[in-house]
Length: 327
Image 1 (cartoon, rainbow, N blue to C red):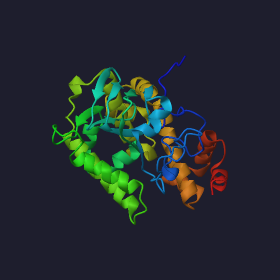
Image 2: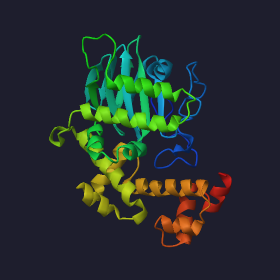
Image 3: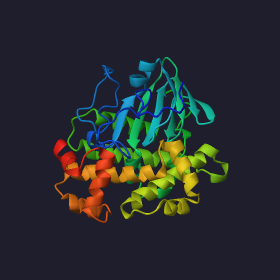
Image 4: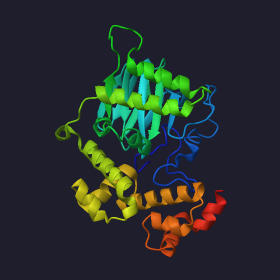
C-alpha cells in the first residue's frame, strides 16, 4: 500500500525517488537531458532522436502508455511541465479532484505538482512534451502573463475548424514541426527546437483561459503558492534569505510553506533551498574550472570551509573529489 502519491520522471515508469546519480538534486541536471527516463529494458522500436535535447523530451502517447496497458495511474512530477496532445482517439483524464474526457485535437497542460492520471482508448495517438520547470520559466521569462496562464491544469481545443475530422490549426502545425525537427539531423536543430517550443507555448498560452484565483481548488492554490516559492528560490537562492522571507513574500507562515513544499515536492522548504544550491554547485564543479573558494563566494557562502562542509554533508564527498569523479 502506498502512503503517498507516486512521483514520476515522465509517466508510468520508475518512481522519481529511486536512487539517483549525484547530479540529481533540486531538479534533474539537464546535462544528460532525459536520457534515462525510459524504464530498464523498455526501449521501443519507434524512431529515436539522434541527440536528446537538454531542455525537453518528446514522445508519442502510445510509445510509453502501451507499456502500461494504456492506463497510467495517478501520479505527479516535482519539476516537469507537460503538454499532452491527442491526434486520434480519446483519453479519460483525472486532474487532482477533476475528471474529464479528451477528444482528438485537444491539448492539456500539466504543471509540476499536479496529480494526474490517464486512461487511453485503444486507437490513441498523439504526443507528450515534457520540459523542466526551470526551462519553462526561462523560455517564457519575457512573457510572465503567459507563464501565469500555463501555471494551471487546463484542457483546450486547438482546432480552428471543429467540423474537420483531423486536427488543424497553429498548435497542430507547431507540434508537427517540433516532431520533425526532433528526429532530424538538420543544422541548427537545437536552435530550431527551442524556438518552435517557444512559439508552441505562446500559442497555447494565448488560447488558455485566464485563471481566477478565487475559483481555484485548494490543491491548485497550494500548487500556485509553491510555484511562486520556486520562482523566488531561483531569484534569491544565492542570497541565503531566511525561510521567513519566502513565506512573507508568498503570504503564508513558515509552517504552511513547509507543508506546501512537503505536499507538492516531497521535502521541506529548507531542503528545496539547499538542493538548489547543491545543483548549482555540482554544475559549476563539473562544467567549469573555477576554484572551490570562488564557487563558495559566488553561491553566497561566507567562506570556502563552510561551503565544503555543506557540500560534503549533502553529496557524501568534498567538492574536489566530486569534481575529480565527474570529469
